[in-house]
Each structure stands twice: as C-alpha cells, then as structure tokens.
Amino acid sequence: MDNPPRAGEEKSSPSKRSVPSLDSCRKYLRHYLNSLQLPSGSIGGVMECYQFVDSRKWLIQNNASMKTSDAHCMKIGPKLEYIQNEGEVSRWKEFKQFFDFHVKMSARCWIPTEFWLVNDPGPDMEQRFSVACGNKEDLSEDREVANEIISRVRLQRKRNPMASQLLRIEKRIAKKAPELTSSNKHVILMLCMDGYLSDEFGREGSKVKQEFVDRLVDISKLPVKLIVRLHTDNDRVTDFFNKLDSKLADIDVLDDYFGEAMEVYLHNPWLTYSLGLHRLREAGLASDLIGELDERCFTTHDIHRFCEDFITGEDVDLPHPRDDWDAFISSLASVLSNEKEQWNAIKKCQTPWIDIQMLEKMFGARKRTTSSARAGRREFASSVASASAFESNCNSMTLEQVIQRWSHQPPDYKTLNSMQDLLVNMPNLFPPKNTAVEAHEYFGKWKCLSSEAFTGEGEELKSLLKRAARRSKLFLHPDKWPRDLTESQTILFKTIWDVVQEQEMKTLS
Image (cartoon, rainbow, N blue to C red; front, side, top):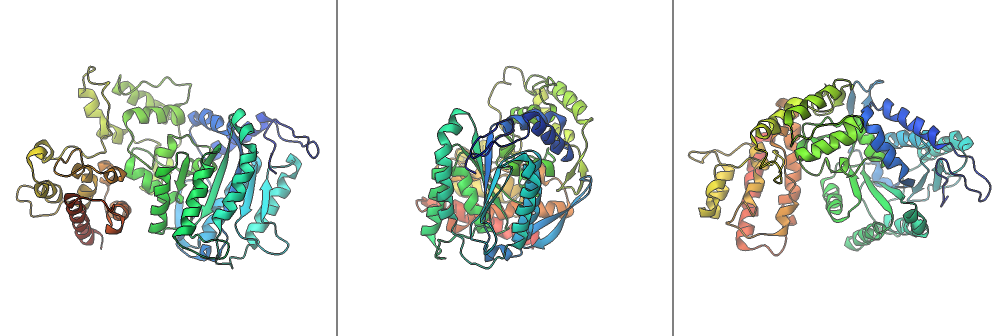
C-alpha cells in the first residue's frame, strides 16, 4: 500500500499486479470531466495535474463532534441543472456525500487512494482501506468495502488525535520522498475534519493545536499537496485554517460547495463557480491559479491565464486583454457560446462560465482608455475599491478625518456609508494609502473584496454581506489584534470595529 501502482505501471511485489492502461485512465477522466460539464479547454490542464499525482491519502476524522449539525448536503439535478442546499445536516452526512463521489472517481480514473480513519472503527472493520491500490479486477470490491466501512462507522469517541496519525503518515511518505522527487510526482494528502483536535488521551488545548500545526509544517516539506476539507460552519475553525492557508505554501482549505462559491464570488464575481470546478479542487486536480480564486481579486492578466488554462485550452489563441481588450472579449465570448451554462450558487440559476458584461463593467472602459505606453504598468484588480474622495488629500488629513471620510457620506458626514462600501473601501484606511497611521504587517492580512460582488439585491445581497461581515469580524475582532499596535493603530482598529458593528446591526439584523 506504500507504493500503489500508477496507470500504465506494473509492480511485481508481492506479485504482478494488473493496472489499467494510461489511455484507459485518460478516457475515464475525460468522461468525468464531461459528466461535470467542465469546459473542453480544461482537459489539458487537468490531465497535466493528473500525471503529477502519485497517489492520495485521506485522513478522516471519525469522532463524536462529527455528529454536530452545522454542515450542508446538496440536492443535485440529474444534469446539474440545479444544486440546492438541503439545509443543515450533520458533519458526517456532508462528509459521506463528498466521500461517495470521490471513491467512485478514484476507482474509475485509477487514482490510488488510501483512506485512514483517525479512530479505530471497531471490531470487524479496517481502520485503513484503499481504492485502486491493487489490481484493476478488485476495483468493484474496493468500492464496496470502502462504502461499507463508512456506512458502519459509529461516531462514539470524543478524542481526535490528528497529529499522531499525521506523524505516521508523514513517515510513510518520507520513505517515498526520493522516488517521488526523482519522478516529479507528489502525494495528495486530504484532511477531512471539523477542526476539533485532541491528543490520544482526549486532552485539548494550545499544545495539541501547536503539535498539529508542527506536523503540517513538517509534511509540507515533503512532495505533498495538502488539502483540508472542512465539514463545519464554525467561524473559529475557519479562521484557524485560513491562517494556516497563508503560512503554508501548498495547502488548499476548502469549505462546502456553497461556502466556496460565496468566497470566490466576493473576490471574482465575473466567474460562475460550478460544482465541477469545486470537485476538481477537492480531487487535487486543479491548478495553483484556480486555488487562488477564493484568496484574491484577479487582474486581467490572471483572468487571461485562467481562461487559457481552463476555458479555451491550447487550441484557441486567446488575445491578451492588455494588448487588445475588444479582441479578447470577442474571442472569449465565441468560445463560451459553445459551452453549457452552469448552476450559479449565488444567482440560483444557470449562467455562463464567465459574465462578459461583468468583465466589461470591471475592466472594459479603463482598458480602452489606457494608452499602450502605460499598459505594461503593474495592474491592480478593479475590485479593490476605486480611490475615494479623501484619498487625494490623505497626506494632509488627521487620522480622525481619514476615518470619517471612510465611514460617513459627504457632504455633512453624518450618515454611515453602506455596509458594502465600508467593507470594500476598508483598504483605503491602511498604509500606504493612509499616511496618518504607521505600517504594520497585520494590515496585509485583509483580503480585498470586489465592489461588483455587491451589485445584486434581496437575499443574494444579504447573503453576501453576511459572509463578508463574518470575514471582517475574524480580522477586526479585538482578540485578533496584534499585541504591538501603536496608539494610532489601536484607535484605527477600534473605530473600524465599532463602525462595522453598528452598520451590521442596521443592515443585517
């Protein structure tokens, strides 16, 4: 099980194994991409990711906290024509839906996968089991065994000693590291969890959390791509893992489909984040650029790269928007006309992969008026709020004046700005734009939001504002402030916190 045979390879220990041909695996992988309605241009990029994957290891939390009902299952139309949120379910039920899909995909596409339960599931049940790690003739039995074990798991123990199990997995991967490095391959390590951590005796606390983080840091030094699939809506858990996401180079922290769709939209509202795209990320078959969709606002250069890698592929010579915006839009629209519309979890209807009108609104006018001499200059996404009135005179303002121009509407500055304006324009309060306060690395941890993400209305706008406000609390809460803040930095954070809290009560309560 340490050395599962890849497609087209045959291992002779302990006996000769039969594995599917590489062409057969590619055929089934293509079938899966088609069933997920992914663009035809995405196939090349996915195949490239696939060939670098040696195997996958899943570490699955199976303790009592997974019975908590704050997770979400999907009701999926037979042709992906709708994807509905079934409401709050147990974390384990959400995990099982996620598990069912990827077990089937592992078998069909021959992705050798070892599943490892954190706690011993009990008599007559294996704590470790695998799919596509033996003979191709055994795939049907592999799936049956895997599904039976998960269906019979009883979530009785409180403890969740993730760190000790990670150490065992780390040792197994370390043995293979030279071979993986020489063959330019990596192992995908998937952590399926809700954030609760303990040691083997059930003890909790900061020491246990630090040991878990240390294990991840050590594993990240190996040829490993780390994916954390969270099965909870707990804000503290999300914050903890988002901090890890910024510390470790090759890690992707994923929420459920609905949560990730919101995160992507808050940064890049021009994209329809489909279930197929989410499944690719869960499978470890998405590019690094795709993994950044929920992290930052893309520039037109990023959008061009994304479209080449995922929408058009190598067969279409897509003009660069920096050189000819109209040609880029025209060519992209032509390709999109041949692709199926996807379920949009934000709009709750089917929409094209890319909203051309949104791109035009965000970048078009500026691109047409930018001279070729200035086109090579570093470009920032339009979603970072456009310069507000106070910015031009910021150097001559006091901190109180800078804050007032952010928080209240001119000319009398007595009425609070809208919740979306407060959140989108928050970076204008941070150095270097705001010279009335000293620089601090903590300012850089704020992830800018797209102003165009808040152009909807009704429930759509309310849901997005709730998500954005939730994120702002994790950044602005006094418990999160660095201990070395200066007096002016403290005043700034406290005032932002108070203003956002006040407007949230008016807008969302």
